[in-house]
Length: 252
Length: 306
Image (cartoon, rainbow over all chains, first blue to last red; front, side, top):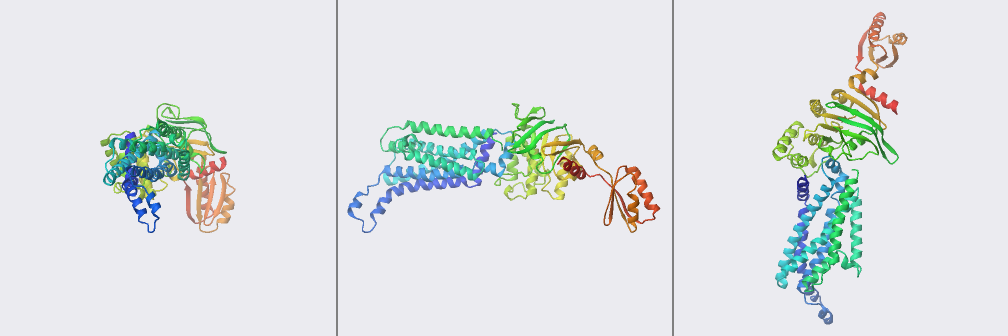
């Protein structure tokens, strides 16, 4: 039964072009990040009449800039995409009435939530793999080779970072009766996490700490951010579990 | 087979169900009637596990809904009033790959049953079309197919033919009739002619309570008053005055060109009315005993209940 639900989610992602949108956006992010890191300083230097003191301040681009750009772009475009495409997955089924058709069959509601989470995570994982390969190739061409082991860890941390937002959006979708309400809850959750990420002492405990950790790792700084990892894992599991429990108790 | 005891459901201040009790025997087609807002859909939603009753209990095949560890949903096929599907799926994918999978049917059985049902509901030609392009009638046919896919012993059908054209309605009602004895069917509809055609037992609810539950024929016998409709060429005013005096006449009305006579005793009325018309030497264009209508019973009971 779970396999049927999962197969339906994958088919839906293909038929509604969600998969294609994910793959294209992440591929572009992977390609464009090293290019931006490499050529932004050069573009700045080509500005006519730029004061020489200012030109001297523009740093020489490095491998770290490429990875930081990649992390920044993924944490912005990637997170927005994950939220927009996840926040309606359950709310839409309730609003349209397909949930009533589905739940009158012998299906556990938590199985529906888990199938949607797993299908979403699979798509995000494939997208991150494509994006990371594209970024690695361009970075290697423009800046030289990457330390592959550390780059792999960086991408696993990036994946967990996106999993947090995917789970928050899924919970929003389960809590809401309409798609509009789901959007409000999901973006509310995003706003809370963004505020926490911007607070100096708290940011290393929030999911953004995962990206800081990954980026530092590639710069040769091995200081681990375990609290960010533990809190992100707990947040992901907590959101999915709450979505399951809430939906099990709800009238459709 | 389906047993409901004192079911209560409130939505805020609205009493959707107010102590509903009913009993549906195995193998019968049960016509579940009631005006809009009477509680039919709420009952269906509780039976399918989509809503929870505030009080009362319900059983399907001796399994109590919401209480037993056994999932009653394996035993039922459900057709909601407006079935909704994934618009990006084809009819065949929906039945064979999705619904059959949810009932854990193996692939050859799912394939065979899907082809069979698509033929029965008249969607064979449209099997590879996306459901998003289906008309309401086609969606209702597909809804019926998905309710039947696992050969359930109990079917809960909410307005199963309301979106169909006359030919489609005839086919689907024929299909429901063919299931008599094989499955227990709770059929909610507002088309009383359909109830008269296919239902063995009729239950009428109003304001969340069961007003009456009877065998269809018994209900018609108990609650309908025989009616004669007569059309005469001329001179009927005097005859009408005369006919009003007959002790078996309950009411007599005239709506050009028809005289409508409600009677208590059909046998006496038939003879006496014809005799009196002959005695007055009136030219009769039409003399008809109307079949008792379930619609009359429904309106009478629900307006009394209201």
